[in-house]
Length: 484
Image 1: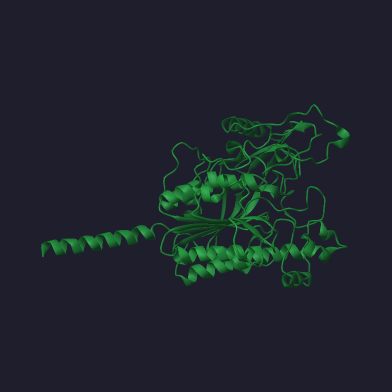
Image 2: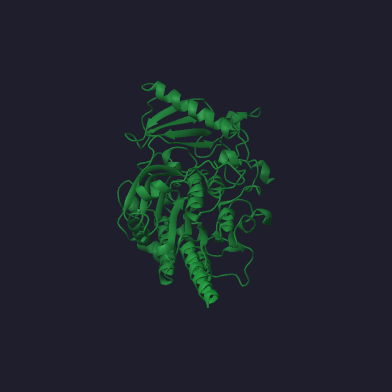
């Protein structure tokens, strides 16, 4: 009888331990938009676009006003999320494969690898080791060779978009019969199925949308809705672009509904983020609408203009605020105070150490994590105001090769062509209109020293003089050497 009683007590203890452990491993849903700007969402002040589900998410969680991507283009930022490292350290410093101007004044560095290196221990691998089921659905853009796809980078289940646009999407691995419908809806189907299949396990879902990337395309009924909507001042109001934002919002809504229907929402962290700043117009100056939507603006300037990042300066492909400042919303019921707004400076290298801490996972032993856990910032809306964050984008795109550092309210941008360094105070000049270098030389020199030290630490690579420089052809775009 004593043995039976002891056994029964042990079973209860073990059962309670399992329940406690499960409750202390929250599910994690990471939803990534593509090219969505900081000023595009209603919860960030946009009064033309509509995103009621993201409004709901922000109202139930925390919105970050000073969240950044580690690079102003997609592949490097995506690499930074997966690795917890700055792009310059990973060696992926431009989109894969990269931009190329063969006759420019400088020859720019190439990505050291045109994929996320296999030796990187990804955030998914760390969470796998902590007992999480992991899924990745959507845009990867970190190498299409099977060795470098999510299935070999820590994800138990994955479908990577590999072409076909928004309405005839193809995937790796191949799906037979091919799924029909709009890409955003198909990716959401994959995601809600993954949630259903793993409802009894802690899971990490990464849903990587292709919206709102060019070429712009959306459902006709949504486009018509925004064509008939009254425009506002200081925002282009591209109806196709607005419709694509609503497609993302519908996806977010379906994910939220699925979690709620399975009683998982109270134990799930949801992160919504974008990979770089908003695109205003294509760098190659061609129309940015897909063929299916090209007639919408056949005789209108909006054939070439997607969005605006006002009050931020510039756009994707630059280290000005318009290229790197991102929308970031995080919901964690019972932990994060609903409706909070944080002014903490955070960046995409922070997700890895944050999620590892939350999940009770172990950090990789021989891998530098450049980011910091922002758990305190999430729970207490508290932050260290003098934190420094960095950018290294040594290629020609929407601007010249450049680097930057922000520390507190101050930011410098280093022009790698001229060597000129500009200084801005973002508290008083979020639009970066006034170079304060001459007024505050000590602050400028302080930040230069910090930037140089960081560049050395991450082994940043820099442009070199081009022996084939031709001023008459300098702005011509060529085929990247790694594509030949």
